[in-house]
Length: 295
Image (cartoon, rainbow, N blue to C red; front, side, top):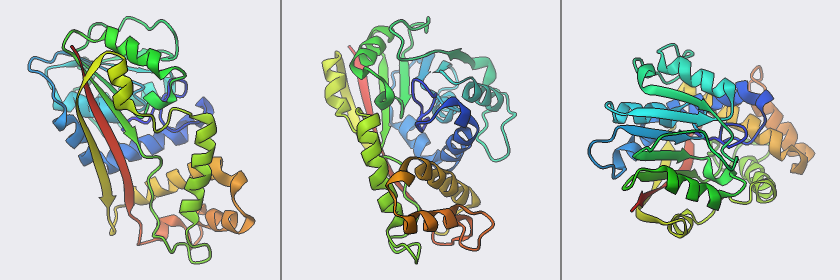
């Protein structure tokens, strides 16, 4: 998934100065969940003859590259507000991805990059696409109902809007871990949920109803359940480390001193207790996709 916001260009809720760490997490998300992203693009009820696509809040391009691979005769316009993420995407599309990151060599000639704030009342010219994709970006919009109407007007008649939303950060640790603070990860998620309730009020919205109210016909809804490992790959370990770092940044003020100490031990890559040294990690999360038609 793209995990993007209209302001930070991705779906993991921080500012431009965090773009490096955020880019790494987005790339790991794409690598670890590649099969699940592919299954979503394969499920989309896209009509024959697709030629033009738009990815709104593309991040570093997990959805962008998956769509370019799924629809090899189509061109795609990738929109985001982060220059760093757009540069990363362009490098991957040219086949010069960082080690371990998803590549789609040869896609560069079918990719157009647009830097824009999706919360702006007026968008740049994005053509009349037959498919618009928004992964983990809609809940960040300041006025998502307005954004849905903008997408409706943007789409070609009969075009499809794919909205992908995630059930928060994935979980990685077993319930009894770590030994000194069992249930630590769930407490971190609870603190993050409280933070998001205040800062990201549209997270968990009823997107099916909102799409209908914006004039779309919802043709399908599907929830993808992710449950990977153990055993796990090195990428899963790095993904867990990156995710727990983000949790630390948002949840630290709500945690006890004991929980913070335990979390710091997991994040210390030189420690024998580092999350990178655990053999019991898994990736557990859900993604829901709505396929909505402009009729």
